Amino acid sequence: MIGEVFETVGFARKIDIGREADWRLDTMQGATVRGMVATLHADLTQRGGVMMQTMTRGNESSAATGDLLVAFELSQRWWKVGFTTGMGHRVRTRRISAGALELLAQAIADAKKMFGLAAEARVISCYEAGREGFWLHRYLTGRGDTNYVVDSASIEVDRRARRTKTDAVDLRGLLALLARYVAGDRRCWRVVRVPSVADEDARQLHRTWETLQGDRTRVINRLKAVLATHGVRLAITADFLEHVAAARVWDGSAIPPGACERLTHDWVQLQGIEEQVAAVKAARARLRVDPATATGRAVQALQQVRAIGAGGAWVLATEIFGWREIRNGRELGALVGLAPALYQSGATQHDRGITRAGNAHVRRMMV
Image (cartoon, rainbow, N blue to C red; front, side, top):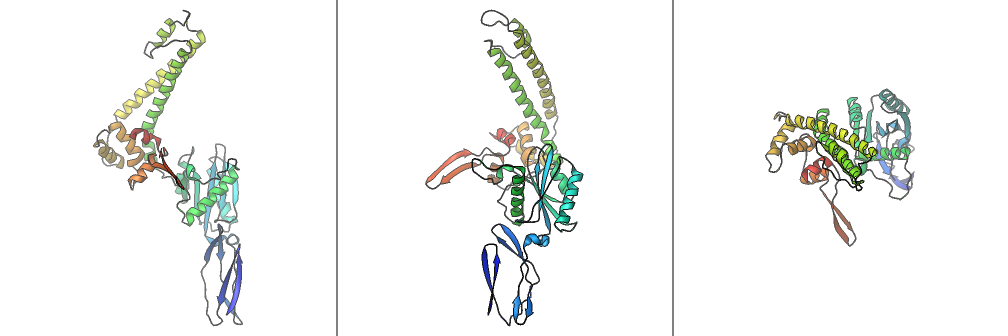
C-alpha cells in the first residue's frame, strides 16, 4: 500500500491507495474546514502503479457553487453591496447611490464576470429589514434572483462592550451568514416573510388610525403641560381657547402671551388631527367583508370569537391571519411577542416574562 498525505488548512489527511485499485472520480467533492469551503478535485491517473491526486482551493475555482452571493448595507444616501461565491472566498465590494437600480444591475453583472460565473448564474441576496421596506426585495425577485429579508435582531454580533462597527464589517458578516444559510444552516438568522403589495397596503388604514391616536395624545399632553407650568388646569373642550383667554395665574394676571401663542398653535394642530381621525373612522366603517379573499374569510372567522369586534378582527386579519400561514401556537406567540423569555444557566433558572418582540400592532390588540 502507498500512503499519501495531503495538507488542508490545519489538518492532515492520509489516503492509502492500493496498487491494483481502479479509481475513477469525475465529481467535485466539497469539504468544510474551519469555516472555509474547499473544493477537492481528484484527478486520478495511473503512472507506473502510483496514483496521483491534486487539490484545488474553492476560492481559486469560482465554479465551486455556481451561485453569486450578494449582501446589501442600505443607507439613505449610499448602498454598499458585497459579492462572493461562498464561505471563505474572496469578497468584492461596491458602493452605489441609494436606489440606483441600473448601477446595481451593472455591479451584479460585473461581479459575475470577475468571479468567472456564467451570465445566467443564480443570484442569492440578502439585506436587513428596515426603512427600505420590501420594494427592493420585489425588484430582486422580479428579475429572477433569490432574496432574503433578514430580521436584524437575529444577526450574530460580537458581545464585547466596544466592538468594531462599520459597514464593511457588517457586510462581510452578512455574506458569511448568507453562505451558512444557503449551505443549510437555518438557525443562523431569522428570515422575514414578505407580504404581497395588496396585503401590505391593506394594513395602512388601521396603522394610520394608531398613528393619529398617538399624535392626538401627544398634542393634548403638550397643552396640559404648558398650562401646568403656570398653575392652570383646563379641560380640553371645543371652547378651549376662550377658557385660555379668561384664565388667570396665581397672582391674578393673564397667561403670558408667548404661552398663549403656543397653546393656540397646538390647538390648531389638534383640530387638524381630529378631522383626520374622523375621516379614518368613516373609512373603517365603510369596510366590507369579501368572503372571496383570505382576509375577508379571516375577518368573518375572527368576528365569531367572543370579545373580538370589527376593528380588532380587521387588525388581526390584515396583520397576520389574512396572508400568513401559522403552523402552531408557539409560532403565533413568537410572532406577536407573547412567547416566554426563559433564562437558565447552571443552577439559575427563572422566567423573565414575555419577549415583547415582533408585531406590536397585534400585541396591543391582543393584550
